Length: 163
Image (cartoon, rainbow, N blue to C red):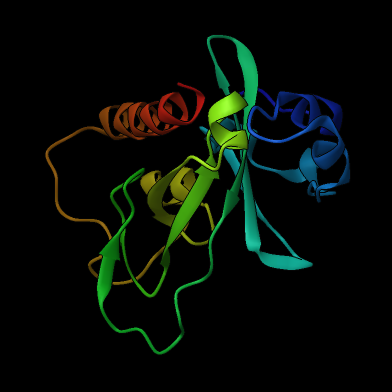
């Protein structure tokens, strides 16, 4: 994915108002992000941990979503799998919910997915971040195929939000 600027990210949100997009927290370290290893940029709002955001490119244009959810409780010992990158975590997967775009979202409709709590799916898939023992199940897929699957899962989620 090519690097995105703060302006590109703010104008890419499809499921919130322009005013909300102006006020939300965008990472200040965009220039230092490992863009070559990112299929999407995901982050949590440091002032509001129940808010998360992701930005990516679909069909050559930036698309961003606002998400709501919470970190899994620290006492949780059950392993859960991310529906985007298929990484398993102990307490590291959250149900994140995106309001649907447009009128459906204004009426309160939303779409949810279990996603890595730190939104670092691209780094887990590439082995750049470790989720612990047993986090990546043995597969015969190549790295490129795993990346394609992650992108397809993310695209399907975004499509459900924007439909």
